[in-house]
Image (cartoon, rainbow, N blue to C red; front, side, top):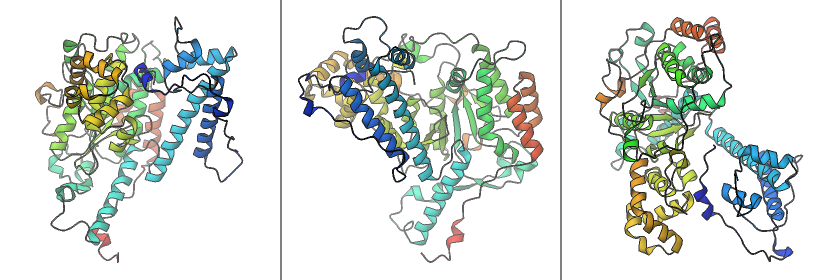
Length: 521
């Protein structure tokens, strides 16, 4: 991410004792041997990072600092009185390292190694869960299968029965649900034959954000007449990889594409500086929004937006409504604001997020791990620490870690503000006293509006509720015609190859509780 929050800098430990004796300085640990088969890859990477950390501190005369803080790194590289552009992004570090700056080279390696460690940790977590990369519906099927087995074991051992059983383990929590053909708006034979389907979440896709993501991730592709198609290509590949297997099986997944409304939204009315730090939409991206909508129409995906609201608010409203109707929700987005919607463990129906990079599931524990607070308190932390990407400054000198500590200590932001005098740290107390009203206002800005009237949303004319909202019947010829018109050859070839081969990936359905009736637990 290119977003930097320099307010974190007051949180980093910076030892200003320049008179440290050599014996007090950290010694370089022995690097892990790459030839040692007993050492896991993650352990080896971690030891390399520790070695690199000590090397960086030694280059700084033994003085430790927060290597993850852009501001403290800038102070080390350029001096605390540095003027001009003191950026420490990838390009700057590479240029300085090429010019012989050893510290810049080490910090560049540190960041690269840190990212590799995170990827390896994610891979191990996926492996432990039995999940596969870029396989959302397959992972969902395996997750449901595990839940079914656990429920069957509890039922057989008596753990799932009794008067003290909560409502979350009753009929509403079953993994399967009956989908009657009459509830479908289509009379397609392939769909009508499916009377029992796997209970699946409503998948809400933060489409506007993904379009920007695809635009910056892919080269500037164009149709032969010069029409830009780079972002369109990225979105089509994502949707096709996500949905094609199920569509070819005649299924109609629960998927909604949420879009930002065009122009200012209600937050701009409240705070004119909202997102004012962002430049205008690139000229070659503007026409691709309409093209993405055409692609969604060709696929048969429902598209929703609400005038004067952001996609986040549309998603929040649809998620709340779906949960009230008994439908689980998954949100495909990397937006931290949407993490506020994630439900704690044991709550059903539930809301989770799906990381758009590899379709990793993000749950309540992941929110706590990343932000130090539960999802319902994340808005308090964002208001205190600020959000540079949305031009929300927060309270000066308070970053995410300090904000999380304060919220955990006082429970809520309102409690914190009402008890400012009890804060022992003078700088924190003074910052909050001076900015109390602003912080409460920022809390209003970061709060998602989950009460948009359905009448303001661009829902299908046949809409009768989110529990019955599904994609329309798949017409491959319609999609092929769109790909041809836009010259999206890779997407067209992938689709036609799947159609010609007749190959459809299938997932083994989870066992039913009846299969465990005779098992002696």
